[in-house]
Length: 67
Image 1 (tube, rainbow, N blue to C red):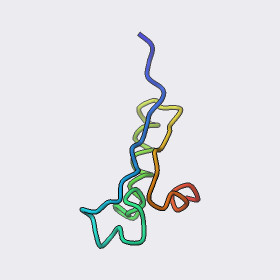
Image 2: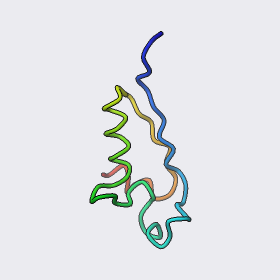
Image 3: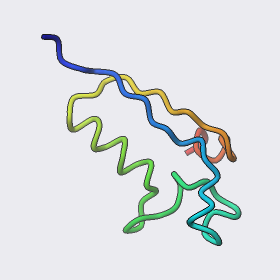
């Protein structure tokens, strides 16, 4: 069986349960230990062999893509 090398990151929600933290920034960019949550996720996926990732974005996608 071939190893999985692709991942989809679901990051398109509004983060309503994290308000007021997510009023101005998208949930994937909320810092966790000083680093955006999205970066933690990407690093974990890379560590597990993921080579291609697709992020599904909606709320302030420019903030995420410019990071």
